[in-house]
Length: 491
Image (cartoon, rainbow, N blue to C red; front, side, top):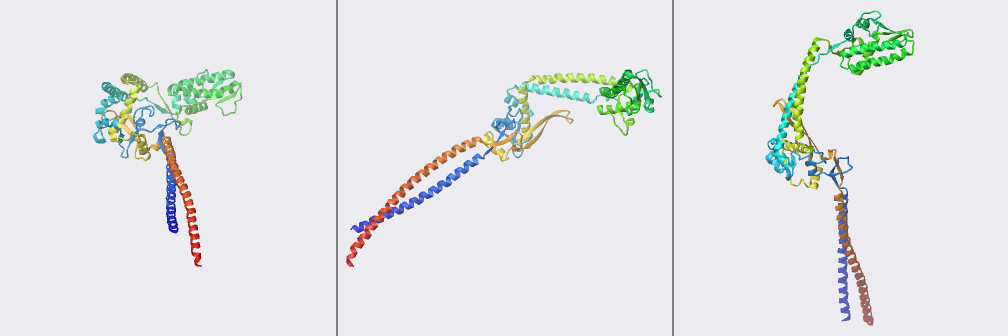
């Protein structure tokens, strides 16, 4: 009975030891699973740290605002009263629930080619709070102003063309006659034309009187030729430049007997070469005014000028005065109509109307699509980051349509992915990172708790396993001793 009981106890302890081994093996596998789980949590947290979101900035990335539907598609200081249309891959404008009913009024089911103008007053009044009657009045004022502007432009196109002449310097010098502006005459010529052609000189006298005489000659040239040129001041400047370069030499009594200057002589008396003086002055004038198309040398340069003494020019003056009066009257009429239009609304109201005109005219032309999720900033960001939605800017200008004989608004569109826009930046998503950190710490604490429980359980099982092993050894030792004692009598 003793040996049988020992054997039963041994079997019981052995089974328990094997069960503990199995449990330790399962717990070890659970620890390995927790390690993989922790690795997954860490990877998700790392991905969140690298998460990017699109933001809008008006100051080169110093501060940001959300790239939200409201910020892009409703008038605000953020978008500077300019709509940035959210469009799908077919170019249709994406509308939310606040714009849906208006989009339906313009075109059913999002078709392009809708009618914005027929519902314009109603929609604008609903969105801005401006009475529809005021909006209609504004439209009428704009139409009147456009009509007056067309009349003004029509008159502008009929401006009589100013008769212009083109000739070489000799043709202009004919207007100079024979007066030099001082008592002296030309050395071997009777007038400016022959003096220029013959290389004649003008006696300037001596000392300070010579400088004064040169000034009078130049005043004669400037006053006469400047009268026929459009750039009178340019001619005055060219003559002054010539005087400045020569007068100091004359005043100081420099000996200019053998030099390349137009002025010749010494303190006993100076003279100026007419052709050299005229060529130098006209060269300066050409540079200053841009008037002068040279073919080879100064003598063959063609200058544009106005023959103010001719009958043709005087007839033009009469015609132009009548045209100018008509133009000024038309300008005043246009200004009055434009003033009525500009004073009807405040600047803020005008900017709101301009915003919605741009938005809904684009919806009418391009068509639209409805998405109830588009107001969710995270959803919109994902759509823009994945290029499923793009941003479209609209340039809206009024052009004169000759076919209908009036001014009409025309839109031009430029569409690109959001990341290509100057004001759009890809930045770290702090909200996602903060949420990820909280989730990481939470999951980490749960895993640590599980691991602690497993370690405690394994430690207890290992302690029990060690105790069982010692008990098994003790039972086996007793069994062996009994066996040896009982069977030794037979030996």
